[in-house]
Image (cartoon, rainbow, N blue to C red):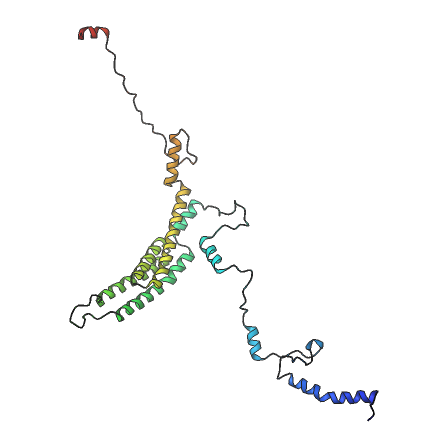
Length: 282
């Protein structure tokens, strides 16, 4: 058999390779991933067609961890403690103090965030109160034991209904206080509600209301303290001014007590007896 060279051999090799190339091109639709020995797309082939499942996976958000994002513990600490930014200068670490008029306006009415806390917490408080009381009534032990004795663990249903009524009154009070922007009243009502639910041994429902009420009370106290400092009515500063005035120095802010202007007469000295009076006495 004689080997052929030249154009005829090239035509034969091209004719033999035609069917295999066509089959690979037809199988490309069924197998989207390239085979180890197959043609490479980077060499100029057609782009790989993705399946429906692969397109869904690509559409999902990436679940990888962001390296620039701080851990959860540091973010919680920054949200609660609010430390000063180390990149800012020392003078710009604290915000500027508000004027007495702005502090008085802030103290008189709650802001939008505090109002939103009350408006969202009040419906949940009413629902939690109804669910908790119904659960307690359902799990209430029987009134009498098998021997006819009174069960000490049994609680009258009327008592549960009274507690439910109190919880509903507190919930509606939260709604009214939040609607009219009464920060102090809202904080007291939320703290009382959380304490009541906490005493019913439903700690998971009571602790959030305790925390929210404590937060509102702390904010109200801080605003009152800032207002007293701005107007010079803080007792601590008055005591400092009194000590400075007692040492002969005037207080720095001028809000300390003034020195007493009442006249105190000097103590009278005892009179010495005259020589004639001594002779008469002798």
